[in-house]
Image (cartoon, rainbow, N blue to C red; front, side):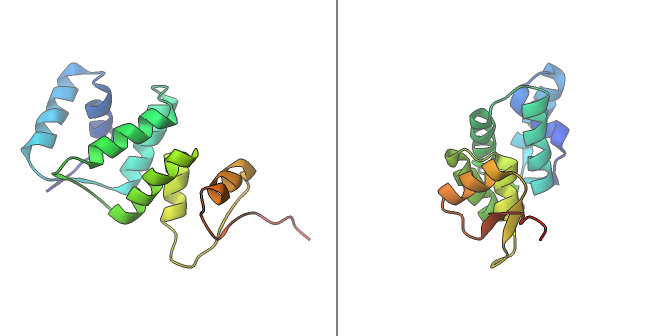
Length: 133
């Protein structure tokens, strides 16, 4: 199995450098691939910030990537749950924060819009950071 860095995943998804994209395709075709959640998070950031991908395109690209038979990811159930939350307008990185928390743990954020979207999506235990009393 080969673990890949963000730049390999980005080259595969964007094909912005033909030589590196070809090498990435060859690597992904050669055998089992491991993608850490941190690589997925960074890939989301790069695709949004540097390439201008919208959240739908990012979610679709990651879902197709992880749908490849030889591609494995850290904590697959939480990543799959996070991908499902993107249908409710939650950015994939934020969704991964939610789905990666320990069972029974609450989740707080200063981002009220994110909290509202998570609650509307049916995520329990999510709230805004309480104001200091």
